[in-house]
Length: 235
Image 1 (tube, rainbow, N blue to C red):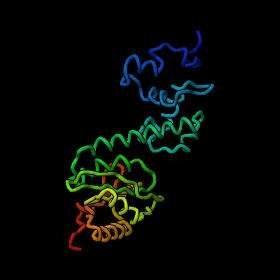
Image 2 (cartoon, helix red, strand yellow):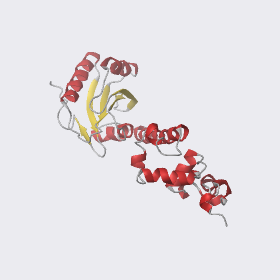
Image 3 (spheres, rainbow, N blue to C red):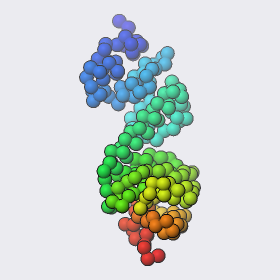
Image 4 (cartoon, rainbow, N blue to C red):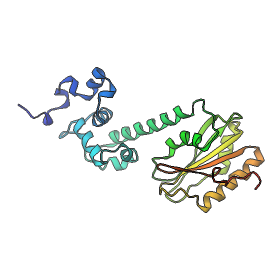
């Protein structure tokens, strides 16, 4: 009897094939490897899609948190993972991040820093380099838009203040919340973080747009300028 490991996935029983299993038993019935196999679609001459998915997960210690941070180039270093498979995996995790952020900000009114973190963290938490975002708010403190303003290396972020306020004015924002990540895990604001926050705050006074907070996102926690008394109306 041929070894099932060497058989094409097409020859497996219907309830053993990931796509057919999902249709028969629902998406919840699939293992992590089976879900990845559906995503990548095909295997190699040596491995079925499911076997390749298992090897891919093993490479990242069976942790979606690690896999979600991988770039297409990193994924393509794994034998059998080409550009199409790598891009599909990265796109899937990006969709998941966006869905998480979208579901959190629907109809929410931001009153505290943790309200803002629920919205912005999915955009920043898994990044290996710094990125800078802005949430535009209306009079009721409800989000009008979430905007990526800039990105940089591991140590700094380039932010165009003119671009930032052009977006805020187009949205007719009354207030804005700034946010960026610290991939290093150190949540303390740098001197540049503080100077940039004050620069954006002073520019906002010209347009009567209030900077309500600047949040630094870490892997599992965050730092709020407002909670720590670093955005003061009397400055």
